Length: 606
Image 1 (cartoon, rainbow, N blue to C red):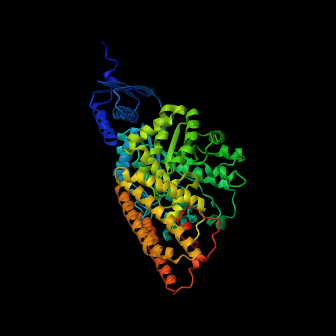
Image 2 (cartoon, rainbow, N blue to C red):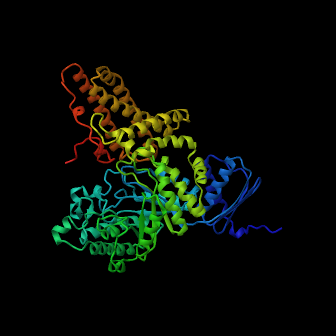
Image 3 (cartoon, helix red, strand yellow):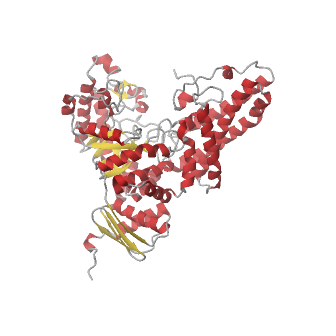
């Protein structure tokens, strides 16, 4: 009988053994039966009790095949037959390494293992200033930047797992961290935007590309250029007067693309600035946006990255992709796994926004699809706890627009090693009806000042958190689970204290105020201390130390303010203060937003 597997097409034994070992490390499942692995299109698996046969088009596809076999074993099955194919040629994650959180090399390798196990073959590390440019020592100074050696090590490992590592940088805006240094002032238009038409700017960009080029096998590069709202309106305006901003962007883009070509890079960029400039109100998703044909005709060869983390209707994604098609370039779609609204990922919002987006992308056979993991405002949530959202992207990639959410959940069960009920208990931090940032606002808000959170939202969040705490208490106390438990306990204590202080003061209930001073506040300080310790331990398990000081200072400020408030209550109770001025202020409905500086004090930075 002829063996259906041609030995000339078999995957090398060492490659199979290596991927088998890495998938076992991810899943905790040892595949003890023989596996014959053939090279071929898509992914096909035939397994019944004894030998398994896997046909895979690349290493990441083979890793997914091994993951699906591990899933079948874990579920107690003894057979598996499936055929799958990629609906996105390139799909994977973009991890934000620029908002304090810079993952260690070993942590990035563990991420690559998990991503490859899902069959995802693309990874970007978003680095604004967190990579090395030898000629600019202040670039990434004290920020945990990756050295060229570290980037090469990550690239080598990604290659061994079948994952393309693509540099992802900024060449116009989002460079405030670097431009804050006096030696960088000549490069500034605004405090976070480079000065267009300055040769010093293009010398800097050339040095950046020169530094990155030998670190990556891939010749694709993401050059950023998003959210440059004040471009041409700072130092540029003073030097040159007002310029047509479409032309300004186009001219700068052409120079950057030319420099990319010097190093063999094929660039892509965020598309929003062209759409914002074409909108009467500066809105990215404006249906009435008009980009002049002359601007489109002048575009150099660059892929446009359409980012959208917000819409819940397939029609919105269809419309925006159609508008992008007008530009005449390849469109990359970047969705979002909501890891940036504080402390824990918001899976429900990820699901509401990404399910319709990914069904549209699969239907349109979008070539490249990214799952962005942003770390806005301090990167309070670690990406490992958000990785469940990546299963939506992997199932859409391999199953197409009819992918099932149950398949995503099963993949997440094995990928995370955390039961679904525990993951859903963590969702309580983002109670559905309360807005995306309410939990974060309440953790960081001053205990005495109004914070713009409606009472019904605080009540709903408290109810959700109280229901989740027993689930987390009964769960195996891994570090992420213990952190989530301490977070929800701290949130409950903070909401109760805010309620006690205002109600007790306004009603003149001095006993309640004394209990707040002697019991609730000390207990809450202890809760913050335990949370900060667990959060710091979680951070150190994944990230370089640089950047943790941001959160350390926030925790320290929260605890010191509680101690200060207890002292103020004590002085009011014994008559040294005739009133608590902060609580005499009326509660007004408006809030300022969800970022730390907006909620920790009503005093704006000046």
